[in-house]
Length: 120
Image 1 (cartoon, rainbow, N blue to C red):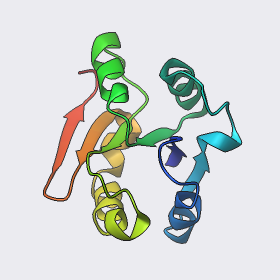
Image 2 (image 1 turned 135 degrees about the vertical axis):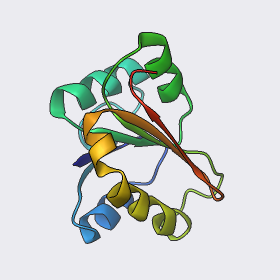
Image 3 (image 1 turned 180 degrees about the vertical axis):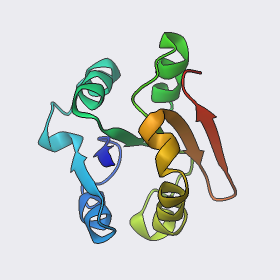
């Protein structure tokens, strides 16, 4: 699994994913900072990446297009620091890697995770 970290999350996440032996790229390393979501989605599909974001628009885009890919991990919390999110993110990735490989939207917050299989 490869993770594409959206602009609204810190580039420091790249090292955190590497620590957990997961390949990750921050969008700022591959695309324009002001790229529309459609460009990011297309890039993720073409390069077989899962999008990790704090942006609610990706879920909406998946629902409107009824797309099977890319998978998206959407964080719904105000504290998007590594310290806060890592304890919930990495167990979720390990437990649901098969779903993410096949197409899923996972929404995480401090209290729960919601998983929807694509297409929505």
